[in-house]
Each structure stands twice: as C-alpha cells, then as structure tokens.
Amino acid sequence: MKPPAYVHGASDVPLLGETIGNNLKRTVARVGAREALVAPAQDYRATYTELWDATTALAKALLARGVAQGDRVGLWSPNRFEWVIIQYATARVGAVLVNVNPAYKTQELRHALNQSGLGLLLLSRRFRQTDYVAMVDAVRPDCPTLGDAVVLDDDWAELLEEGGAVTNADLAVREASLAFDDPINIQYTSGTTGAPKGATLSHHNILNNGFFCGEVLGYTKVDRVCIPVPFYHCFGMVIGNLACTSHGACIVTPGETFDAGQTLATVEAERCTALYGVPTMFIAQIDHPNCDTTDFSSLRTGVMAGSPCPVEVMKQVRERMHMPEVTICYGMTETSPVSTQSRVDDPIEKRVTTVGAVHPHVEVKIVDPDGRRVVPRGERGELCTRGYSVMLGYWNDDHATGAAIDSGRWMHTGDLATMDDDGYVSIVGRIKDMIIRGGENIYPREIEEFLYTHPAVADAQVIGVPSSRYGEEVMAWVQPKPQAQLDADTLTAFCRGAIATFKIPRYWKIVDAFPMTVTGKIQKFRMREIAATELSRSEDEQA
Image (cartoon, rainbow, N blue to C red; front, side, top):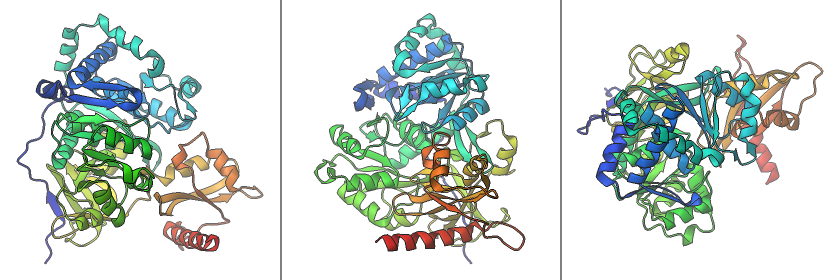
C-alpha cells in the first residue's frame, strides 16, 4: 500500500521570530560595508549601511506625514531602487504596503485603492505609454480614502527631507511597538468571483519565506542576485529582495522591466551569482544574439518560477548560462509564495517534471475531491499547504478567506497534483480555471465580468489555450445580443485601457451558443478542445 501524499518540512534551522526591520538591522550590523542594492539603469549603488540610512530617512518621512501603524500605503511603480527602500521603510513603521500592478488600468486601480482603503500613494510618473498621474487624477473622485499621491520622479528628495522633523527616538518607539504577526503587505490576485482579492501577508509570512528560499539557494554575503522579475510580485519582493537582505546578499535590478539584452549585460557587468525569471524570460535570453558572447562564469544558481519549464530550456539554462544549481519554485501569493522548491543538487529530471519538495516548516498534502481524505502517493488530488506561510486572509473579505482556508488552516490551492515516492510534487492541472500566461495569473471570471459591461455582449466565456511562447494565451468566446454586431477588433479596442494588457484576449470567437451539459452547465473543457483543434489547423494552413 502506498504511503499517504503528505509531507512536512522538518528543519534544524528555526523560523525567524522578528520583524522585517529588525532582521535588516541585524544584517546591517553583520555586513554593513557590503553592497546591498544596485540599480545600474538609475546609476544607483548602496551598501547595507547606506540602505539602512535611506530606509530610516523614508520611515521618518512617513511618520511626519502622519502614517500610523496599519495604515495602507500604496506603491505603483515598475522596478527601481526607490521600490526597495519603500518596501523596507513601510515595514519599519508598521504600514501595510499595497502593491499596485504597474499594468493596471483605471478599473483595476480604482478597485485596489478603494478595497484597501489606501491613504497615501507613491507612484512613478508614467510607465511605458501609461500616464500614472493622469490615471490617478481620473479615479480620485471615486476614491474617498485617497489622500496624498507622491510622484517618485518629482517629489522623492522633498519627501525624504520631511523626515527631518522626526527624531530617531520617535522612529525607535514605533518600531518597538510592532509585532512580527502584524499585517505588512497586501498583494492583489485576480479573483474567481471577479474583482481582485487582496492577499494580506505579515512580517512572519514573507520574511521567513524569503529567508528559507535563500537557505535552499545557499545564499551568503558574497552572492549578487539579478532580479529582472517585478517587485510587485512575491517573486521579486520575497524570493528576491527578502532572500537577499536576510543573508546579506546584493539585490541587482537591471531595469524597470525585463529586457533580455539588458539583463544579460547586467549579469556580466555586475558579476551576478544568481538570476531569476519565468521560463519565457530565460527563453528570450537564450535566443538573444548576445547570449553566446556573454560572460556567465560568475553565475551558479537562480530561480525559475511562474509556469512549467520545458526540459530543453532547463538544459540550456544550466549549460549555456552556467547555472548548474538553478531551482524551480512553486506556490501562490496567498502562501507568501513558496511551498515547494527543487534543491540545488536535484537531478534535472526532478527539476523539469516536478515543482520540487516541501519547503522547511511547511506542510503539504494532496486530498480527494471532498477535501478531507489524503490520497495515496501517485494519485491525483488537490494540493493543500499549511504553515507559517499561509496568509492572514483576504483583506476585508472574510467570505473569500473562508472559502480558501479551511478550519484546519489548510490553504486550498485549486491545483491538481501528484506526489511521488520521494515526496516531490508535480502539478498536473487546475481545479479552478486560472490561466497562467508567461508567469501572470489570470482568472477568467474577472475578464468575463468586464466583457459583460459591453452593451452588445450577451454572454462571455474565457479560457486558456496552449501557447509555445507563454504557456497559455487568453481566448474569449463571446455571444452577442440579438441583432448586435461584434468582431475581434471592436472587442479588443473595448478592453484596451480598461484592463491590463496581459488580460486582453489574444483570440476571440463569436458564437451563437456555448457547449453545454444536459443540465445547462457550460463545458469549458470542450471549448478548450475545440479551440486547440481550430488554432492548430489555422497554424498548419499558415505554414
């Protein structure tokens, strides 16, 4: 008889029972003179002592602005050095940092500001073709809690100067009042019931998760970690930043957003020892004309996460990019994020066919459809995880929290998985209809509810279809109202500027009806089958 599909991450290394600020302070005392943060595109470099001083200045400025413990402070920006300083300064004053996705448009921004009750927003002036300042002005009348909006490009130096009225003793009093179980971060995840939900995370959640990611990767003060993945994701701010600062390693951010050539140049110039990315990022670097001339000799490890990695890609990353110890991480924002991770010495088969073994101090089980019985190893079931990493809950949404976390504090992931005899987990499908496009989690219901607002749309169903580049692409099946005329161009234009670009369907199918069961339930699996066949036929005809 097979043993049950349950494992716990026994560890001789204890959990960190401290706040993020106290952990950073200990790191500064240990390696203060070493580089902590490098942003070549901004010509910015800071040692750990200088990073501490910068976070102190901003923390005092936040106190001067009247930011109280538990107040929500938003950050709407792509990767830049200020992002990291804000992350740690808000933690030091006990504010709850609200990560606002740089891709958000007006509808999503309005929801995040109002749902979190955000009072102070720190933002970039613009990102790509989006004018952030104009968008804030547009939604402000609908956001009663929003007070100040501070533009980093224009007001950063002035903001820091405001902290001069606050003493170090004042800041010390605030820091001493904080507990490591306090909420410290809200990250919005697209919700199956429509609007994004705010996963609320504590110091304890994300500090320990970052620390143990760094432990698995073998980080020390000599490591220099290239982080082209976004900071607004747990991937960047936890697996990246907190893994670094808890070990005295250096955070290296190549630019505001991922660029393959820029990332390659940064790895070489900064002598990085680790590199992060979703598989599509690594594919872009392998395919870049500068790949074969880049000096990767400093690299040894890194993290690939966000979507499954093809075997050939993993082999090329290990060999051509000199990353023999690259690891795979699996998790979700609601679990801080990592629940399982491959180890640096795992055979390549484990790295490409599984999402690794359970993390230290975390429990994982695979249960039957009723959610109670643990299935035997090798059998499919829903992956559940429990431990310090499980979020406090969804911000101001007890119903959604109760639906995700059961009475035993198990987080139900919605992912179908198996566990092998060695305790390694493989993801084999999803109970929920979430689409993973290039590392971005997209929930169809959110897009469907937006499409319902089009006056000519009677119904809409959104699915994921296979993509060799992104893993999955978004496809929408749309049923027009009687006598209404709809086409792909019209629908795409309707989405543009209202929802994030990565959520806009790549494919559209105008239909009179949807495949249904005899009881009237829509068969999304049948829609996927039809779409896959039609898209494959279209590609064959084009070839």
